Length: 211
Length: 298
Image 1 (tube, each protein chain N blue to C red):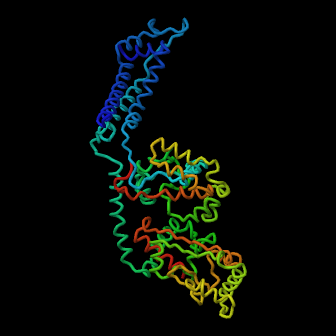
Image 2: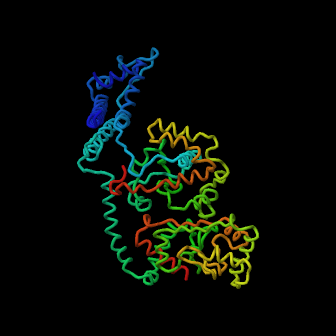
Image 3: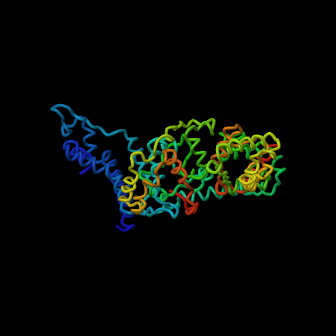
């Protein structure tokens, strides 16, 4: 018995070949994915909390507008990044992100620590017309955010209910009053609320940062 | 499942895969059967497809074997040195956290003394040092320019000019240091509910007169100014830096110095906000910025 004989047998039996391919390509997943599904070792860091109704809407707008194509939300454990953005990203900071928005490309800066760096007023001006405050910016303008209602489809409580089912610790009262919490808010208000919620997690010791 | 189980699971599957790859590679080149077939070309035992199609399989070039073998060896060496096999940390005890804290330490060794040196210098010495001022300008570009503009002249009728004489929260070194460190929150009340439209217009006229340096004592609206505005802006209109109430006796207005903007400010109020930078910036950086800002406005 040697590899060539097995190879021949596989070549001549399509069923076996399919099974063989599935088995071999499953090994990577069995090693990398399966253990992490069963271990559940990622706990939220002390400062990490589920998004409020407004922040949640803002986050969905962030996704809709494709912000994560140009902005990452992951500070890597590299010296230059830690100096610029402070503490490296910690897995526990992303437990309430479904899906996480770490991104893989930075045309603009990383945003995972942008909260409270600028005022709400600056964020509003900048989203409506980035060139008004950063003359050399190449970021597109998002003027329509100001004109659209954040909860226009009146479904924020449904989004929260879905997340609650997935284990996010929303109370039933929070979900019940979610629509009132965001009543009258524009998309601009919601996305600014979301951006301001992206903060340095001071509860994590920097030296024990990320992975 | 216990943590150890998955650790072993990862280790055993990884090593079994490596072993399997090694075996496939070896046997593809060196099994006796393989050699015999390679020797007699077009051997009858070779698979025949569609009556006369033969693979005529010959082994791949031998340097492929050495390539694959060296990759396998490299994998094993890697797994011995670095974390990869379950909980085994590897002989080098490497982790990204260690690497980061080592780099941080080296960084501190290089820049710690330089920082100390900056903290030991006084402001006029800092301002005389062209190299340090260049660094300060870069800091300003990174942390402050998004609002105040690269030239520090303010922007968008929202973010104050830092090169003029008007300092809403005070322009001494101590004031500016406090502003950067702790941030500021200004609150101008809106008077639309308590002033009538006439009163709003008259008050706007009074502010415009004050801006031109004219006396406003005789104006009929002055008593209302005394009651409503003087607590913060002072009865002569010179303002109060402790409250962030701007001086009204010049024509520098953060939110626009035209009549319509001033009226809007009186009617609806304004809420200026400067964020605190005590987390993002350290003492040295703040000192450099204060030195640069006070030098820049001269």
